[in-house]
Image (cartoon, rainbow, N blue to C red; front, side, top):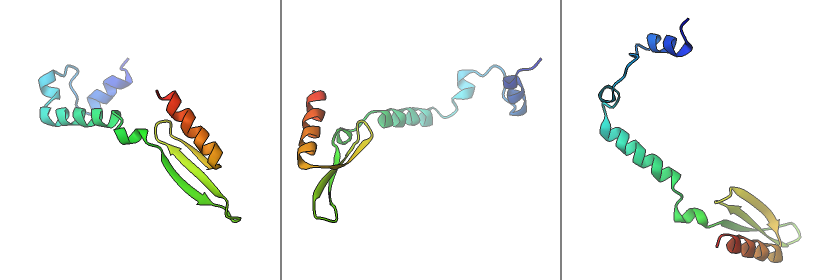
Amino acid sequence: MNSKLDTYWRLELIPHTVTSTQFCQFPLLFRWLGHFCRRIKTPSPQAAIPFVWRSKDATGNIWWNVFDRLTGQTTLRMSNEQFLGWLERRYTHSL
């Protein structure tokens, strides 16, 4: 009984034994792709900086909003005290 992989190889005309020279016809391309993927995985120094913006409600109260790029979390409508507490917790935990 043929497996699904054998059927796929047969339909795509892929030999069962693929040598490294047959597989890697474009070594520079694969080297570049590997380098590119490593760059994507490595966080940039800017990723550690949270994105902060200020907003006002209808009564004129100022609220702070934060998108933390490290955790991917967004926190909306914090007061000044809550925002300062968030900053202190974030930077004491990251040390």
